[in-house]
Length: 416
Image (cartoon, rainbow, N blue to C red; front, side, top):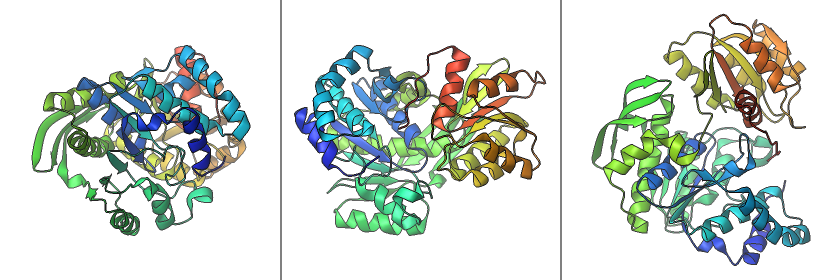
């Protein structure tokens, strides 16, 4: 892993600067950026625009990272673009993420997308995606994550994520921490960019279930009632409001026409129009299996609170993490909804060993079993046959393997 923009600039120069051939929206954040990006993409697709979506990591197949109108890039396109770029990758010792980002931008340019929604990989300032000039920048949340890379304080992390703020380009944020907001406000002032803060008091959730939300939104003097959001969890209402703000500003700056029908249609069919999965998603109904990629303490806290609000009772939890995560804090949250736990290791050398995870769960008094494969843990959880639902959570790698196993899909692990 390396950071800096020299590598990606070399690759896009070879491809004749595809990043300059489409309009874009850029999204960073500790949590919620994938959901928000998918919501924005879904709304533009519903409005009839050809929409690119670049996210990472993938869950099951590499192709999921690069989509147009929810459809993943074809294997043929991946092969052609990879082959064309390979000499440049080898010459410059490019990273995997640099190469994939260049391929995504070239694919969007060749597809003649009207707009691309681009999620940062890690941080923002030195992330390979940070060569675009977006219509609007979005910073969803800021928390203590990747501290060995981004910094050990909220201010340091805010500075890195705030690196996506561009000259005279509005920045929309749902960040609550005043320490982080001060940093973002300084960066906006330095770039002559307007900051738009989005607050939860502009949201009224009418109904909430595993099928999604029914919500009223208020923003910019507008009111839109009884909007269906197809992702479960009340926290998704905030992501939806961030998306609505971003769409409104991007539409005005990019001369797009987005009517209320498109807003409603896009938020009601996020998975269909964007291809998104594993956000409190039902993977299997009988017995019930829910998957969510919460992989840090704050995301896990929100997930557990959302599940408790739905009164689904306790869960069999299939759980695994990468080595760089704060697992004691995550486990403290999961114990609130756990009947028992099946700790697993994903197919990557970055996985934290099950012994450490199991010991931490036992300290909390939760029954736990260890498995060296995700499929083993999922199978054991489903064999309980006691009517208790199963939750698969932790890293993207664990959730991706579980989905592939349950749906009999071929799984590809990549460590980035």
